[in-house]
Image (cartoon, rainbow, N blue to C red):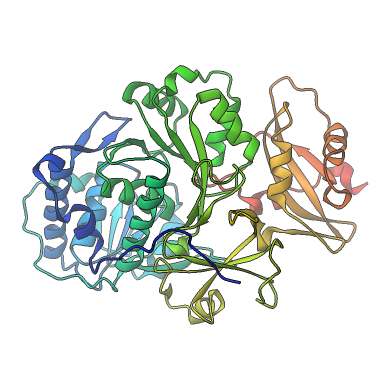
Length: 508
């Protein structure tokens, strides 16, 4: 069956991102602070950001960058990122955002695949015309007139790269219409969570990731929030920022929630202004969220989406579903749960792969018709690759990624479920679970970070898990390691865990 959004449909305007977010500024809003860098203390007002972005767009136009051009942007979270972002969009070009920590080979590969016409960033590239990030302020302050053009809402605004449900990273074509729709959907859902305009907001996750770009930057700017950010996550700056600036809304990833729940140095008084924290990018365990709320006295909810959906598809409303839920479909969004092989609808209450449909869904993958056809199926449905269950109250719970589900003796075991359980153990700071082959079987293998001084053994932990799960879900192997590998948004890098060799004793 189709699960339609319970919320009123939104009218999506025929406009581009720049016009939506910065096009109409009142004198009062123009004077408001838009972004403050926690690492430097530098700030920019909305009026200054608009003027510098328009000047930057004019500078790009002088370089021949305009509609049809692709601009790769590799700049950490900063005022410079925002100037370049809006300048690229105002010039009518397409943004190809990439992470600041990518190595040279990945930078060149993605830029080549995107068909980059101009590279802006930190890395010295040889194959493309380049503008170094340190040159952004000079170009932004030249007062060069922005080009006179009308931007088609159906033109490609952004080309982030994503692995999608399978395979190597692919360029995701997101139009202005896609992102405008998602900005409005996000702001509507924030309103349901009692977040009003002009809120002090901490956005610590990378703007180069679609979660950071749309949810942490564009949507808050649309609501004239004061955004505080930092170039990379730093716990000291993160905590001090809350205490110093009265942060009311914070976007987090699961590792941050775990630290807020368990780190001994956290003082609740520092978070006295905190009203809401939203976790996304990876599943998070409900007890962790409740532990943060109890410790800090705020509210914590989950959101869910994917790059191919701009990214938001659903977000919980605090008090309308338990902490394990990612909520109901956002406005204008429909969901289905299907069998991962047949794509036939599953029975109500049963788990299935989530299909999604709405105005935020991508046009397709760049130069990859086969992958597009595999992901955008009949009826305009997007295969998300996430396995979920929808409860009787209509709230959805993400169980795991379809391709990460462990198949033990014919049974399906969700790594995220075991990870959530492991994190409840008082001696465990972090955990990751993958399927690993041993004696011809795929088994759940857990990688665990212990609390300093803990005397926990592998056998003790396996017995502890066994007492709490159905027998086929038991952890069959445990490795204690120093840290769980994760990407910049907090997702566990399971491939790196799978590559960790078995201890020699396992081969005996």
